[in-house]
Image (cartoon, rainbow over all chains, first blue to last red; front, side):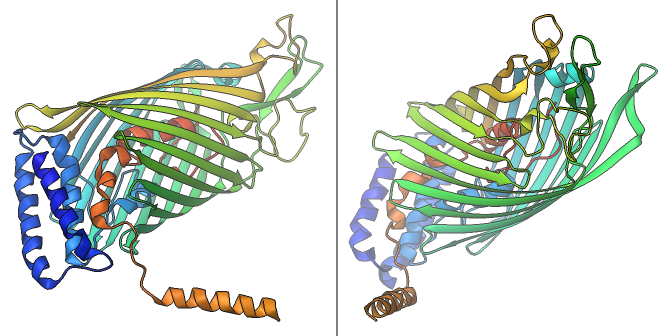
Amino acid sequence: MQLVNWLKVACGAFSGMTRGDSVGGGQKAWFLPACRALRGAFSGVGRGDSFGGGQKAWFLPACRAVCGAFSGVERGRWGKVLAVLCLAGAPAIADVLPDDRADVLYHNYTGGGITIQGPSVLVRKKVGDNLSFTENYYEDLISSASIDVRLSASPYHETRKQESGSVDYLHGKTIYTAGYIHSREPDYKSDTAYFSISQSMFGDLTTVSMGYRRGWDNVYRDVKVAGVLQNDPTFHERADHRGYSVSVSQILTRNAILDVNFEAITDQGYLASPYRKIRYLDPTVAGKGFTLADQIYPNTRTSTATSAQFKYYLPWHAAVTGQYRFYNDTWGITGHTIEVDYTHPWRKFIFDGSLRYYLQNPANFYSDLFPRANYQNFMARDRELAAFHSIAIGLGGEWDFDFPWIRKKSSLNLHYNHLLINYSDFRDALLAGDGTYTAGNEPLYKLNANVLQLFWSLWF
Amino acid sequence: MGKILATALVMTGLLLAGCSPIQPWVKPYEREHFADPIMSFSRDPVSSSYLDHVFESREGSRGATGGVGGGCGCN
């Protein structure tokens, strides 16, 4: 840490010279090699001695920044974050490739009669100075007896597996990213290809990114034949997706950064769930008073989402984040997402807390209970399209330590989120006809879910 | 006439401002806080993309969150 402080002091001494311009060739000539040497030295020091991996993780980028300051070619990197992230789901920095790291995560979602759990493994590795490869394997082991399943199908178990790979190519101040995702479950197969480009500018205070993605889905329906679940040979539908994104990341002050993201997505094809049903009033059905029927969805959907994230560094070495997203689409859904996060390091720990509020109105063709059969052209009862608001509270803890033997920075993390969804027009139809409730008068449905993540990370 | 002149002056000023190089108001050596991991919007990508998937599977909204997923996993 003393060395880091020394370097900061050294930078301060030169700050007068660098205001508005780069330093003269003389200083640059000695400082750049010196800084490179320091970087090299500290790259080696992360192995356990006084300079632990934690300090190294932030020192090296800081040193690069200092080099930029004295070279006159101010190389920034911080702005980048959301750009490539928008498509790759990983932080990227303008002219620095993401760190080499490996993550092994176990996730568990329990709520509403559903348990989804499984692993996720991510490995990211640089090859040379300009290329970085990322691989991810993700699995959902699903055991479902949700309210939808109990109403119109039967409980089931299945596995969804997802593999993805991407490559980042750094050229000057630009990062090109290309990737591919393949996801499969017994009744749904999905492929997505994406490409993005990120460019830092204006003294590296600003990073602009653009991305495009294209997806192809194959939708099947499982049926039980002689007690064995298999694809219905009479049902095979397709759906295509296109996504366009633009992100701007802007350093506002020495403590504040703002990201603004816009994404438009268009879908075409079969967009419904083949298992879920609508229900309509049917007095001829004694007791329940309703009949189930297939959903009828439009074959197209176009949505736009705009979000802003603001992060501020607090004087006591903590950070607070505020986020807002506005969403609307051609199905008539409007959504608002507001989130506040707080991050607080303490010794070798980092603690996180978050509060997320979400509000949406229903799709134009959604109804919990239609008045009669064939009431309108499009009809849906997917609760994702209903009106509801939700609150999610999150707590997280990270313990940083040097991984034994190889002496690299490592961390163990535990994150917990509680999700509460209050539906405004989705009722518990399972209660209809139980002697207390009739169709359309059942209590509104509420979902309580617990989301747990336990993961280990290693930087190498 | 006065309004037109004022508008023209403002526009001219903006155009001239666009000709001068933008000086970064936060110097690189003042950006050390952004190198701290707590200032990253996605400190752990494997975790944040998972959580995005949890929310996206249960909400009508999608996009502009920083992740790409595939499949459904939503029943």
